[in-house]
Structures are given as C-alpha cells and as structure tokens.
Amino acid sequence: MAKKLIAFGDVHFPHYQPVALEILKKAVARIRPDITVCLGDLLDCGQFSQYPPTFGVPETDYEADLAQANGLIDFLQKHTQERTVLIEGNHEYRLDRWAAAHAEGRGAYNLLAPRIQLMRGRSGCTYIPYGSADGKYPHYKVNGRIVAVHGWSYAQHATKEHLRKSQGKSILHGHTHRCDSSIFPNVWGAGTVQARSAGCLCKPVPLYGTGRPVEWVNAFIVGYLGRRSDTLFTVDIKGDFAILPDGTELRV
Ligand SMILES: [Fe+2]
Image (cartoon, rainbow, N blue to C red):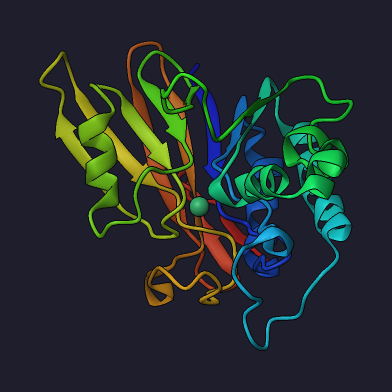
C-alpha cells in the first residue's frame, strides 16, 4: 500500500480563509495521511513585521494567533498516522529577526518563538527551522525522492526554478500562494521528477506589498508515496467544496 501524504502551506493565521481551512481539515480527517506537512507561514507574525500594518486589516493578539495555530496542529496530529511536519516560513522567521534586533526581543524569545511555542509537549512532530548556520537550505525529506521546503523564490516561474535547484529530487513548496506544477522526465534515472506549489489557505489580501494576490489559489497537495514512485495531486478549493483524487466531494 502506498503511504498517504497531505501538504499545505501559507495559512497566515489570523488571515486564514475559514472555509478553505475547514475543507483541508475534512480532507485530513478522511484521508488520515501517514505524513502531513505544513509548508510554512502557518503564522503571519505581522506583529513583528518591519512594515506598518496594512490599512483596514484588523490587528490581532499574537498569543491568540499562536493558540489558533496550535489548535490546527492538534487536529492534524490527531488524524495523522505517522508524522506531522512543520516547516518554518519567512513569516515565522520574522520573529527571529525581530528578536535579534531588540533587547526585549532576546529576553522574550522563548515565550514567543513559533519553533518553541508550536512544538511544546509534542511527539511525532518535526519542526524544520527557516535559517541554517551552514548555508544549506533547510528542507524535509518526505522520502528518498521528494523534499519539501517553504520556498526559495517568488518569481513568476518559481516552481520551475525550485525544480532546477532540487538536484534530481521532486520538490513541494509554498510561499508563492500560487498553484503551479512542473513535471519533467528524470534525466538522472527512471520516471519523472516534479515541482509543485501548494497554493495557500489564507485570504487574498495583499498584506505584504509583494506578490500578485489575483493569482493566489486556496488549495493543498495530496500524494500517494509508493515503494518506487509517487503520484501527487493538487486539490484546488472551489469556494465551499473540493474534490479529492478518489472522487470524494468535500463540502462545508
Ligand atoms: Fe512565505
């Protein structure tokens, strides 16, 4: 039997899209994946941004955002059979940059850092930090053929760019909020290699001053991981419903 994978990214609590997130949760509860991967930017961490708040977007309490994120991780762990993986995004990493720049930030770091506050008391859960001391890009090895990262590029052809740099591995990423996929014959071996971006589960609000919200898609990835090969699908959320690869319709 192939192992089952669900990967999603860019929830950006508190700017999440409630209906889209509910559909993801229904998919997780139904599929009961062996591995669930959050591809980063689970939290927006807007409170620690160097940029001023976006006009018209209500400000929230960071601790309330953390509680929402922890509630989602609890749910994922409950329905995930083997391992839940949290890959840190550039938004969670804001907190590290803020802490490094402020004396009070260094004091409060342990109380605030997502890598500590989202992992407290958990087993069966892996956290992949955003930065690395050795200059290697942090990633999670889903299996011998697939890696998962937050995202290296926001460029128009970011997904292809990820595949060019992934050295013969298939690669899943978030960060762009778009749904792109690129599948190539594997010139290093048999079959194909592919890169796939997971879309996002946040509202299409131009919060960050970059990006093209009109291209953002609420979606997630479902994968079947065999012994020798894998098949990956992108499930786009069509307003209040989505159709899984096995034909099941999920509706909120
Ligand atoms: Fe990001």
